[in-house]
Image (cartoon, rainbow, N blue to C red):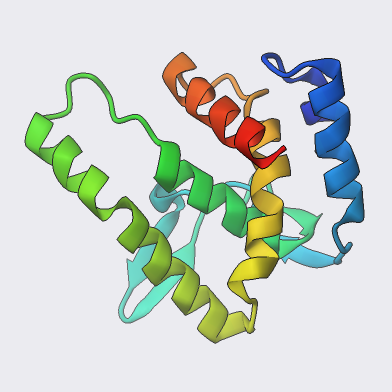
Length: 149
């Protein structure tokens, strides 16, 4: 994560170091993490949600996985060809989707929301290094990062 933050564009060297200092203050865990917890990697099998596509799995803090999910839902820019009513509906449901997912995660793991919140900053900074997100999403992430610094 530190390497991705250091290689991310858009942030100044001083901002990157602030994010890394924040990251280094977070607790270190050794738990299985999915690495790409997006809705496309969650399948419903009966009454169970099952994660698929474990290519990016690692050992670390599950809070980072959950922060990744939150950022993805909160700042996702739907494709320009998406119907405007679908975009409006998704926009109106973003925070509800996050709330339901986090509540279920908390119920299953005991992880509290404040433990996840601390991971938003470093995960957002790491995502600036990703090629798969738009410039518009990167601008939103940059604003979020700077508001937290």
